[in-house]
Length: 386
Image (tube, one colour):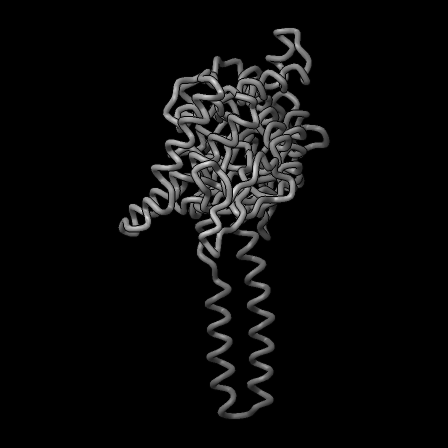
């Protein structure tokens, strides 16, 4: 049995067929990926066997109940056997030698495990607006690997983190994305909502309807308390169009995830000997994607420790959030506290529920959303001491 080695990686591809096992020397190449997709499209015969068994049992029932039971039992055994053959025909097995996956792959796995424990993880800006996302040990249809594969499920697609690259599954097809071309940007974002995950940072609490001075408006019987929550935003580019934006309640786990993916991309570029596409401002996704995670190699270049790098990232993210908050209030960055308060009160008066109560449904909801943004921006600036 021979093995193909590239660097520290060793993979044997076996076709699980009753015939002699055939081995290929690929490391998730285009040819191998095409073969995986072709195998997964093979026809399943088990449903036809099950249907034939059901028809045979129905026909046998006209003669004898015992005969029908025997036919049904035989058909069930045949269906199970054919189902196993279908599974083997449609599955490609990847075997990694011990330690071949590399430290970066292990770091990505640990970061995914940390992010999977976040109290809240959503995809925002996608086809469904804001929808739940999942990080975990996901199924890899058509692929069987002897290592744990962590993945990210965002609804219409799945990102599966293999040692060599990221496999994006859309529908029934896999598509390979090199780590070097996967951009990740980390920033902060504040939102006002009624419920917040236990691990989220609550900046300030307010009410749905407020007076001009920011206090609770007692004229409304149902006036729930709202929380202004600071989330982490992760913008993933290069995996498809449009960019994938994630909102996470655990900001520490999100930062670790961003650093791990950036580090995997840096190693991928170094090992391939190509320049690779650097994660620059053009990859930052939406306008407010602030601080880009640079990985451990950047920290080594500027002589700073991981803690110092995290502090700089947090400072840059805070600056981006503050700039966005000033923009929401319609004032220049660096305005005095008095100017901030005056701008907030002016906007709160304009979008107060009494002022928009007579508007049509769509316009009223837009005004309510605008009021939430104003409250969140004002709370953010107060938290930052601006």
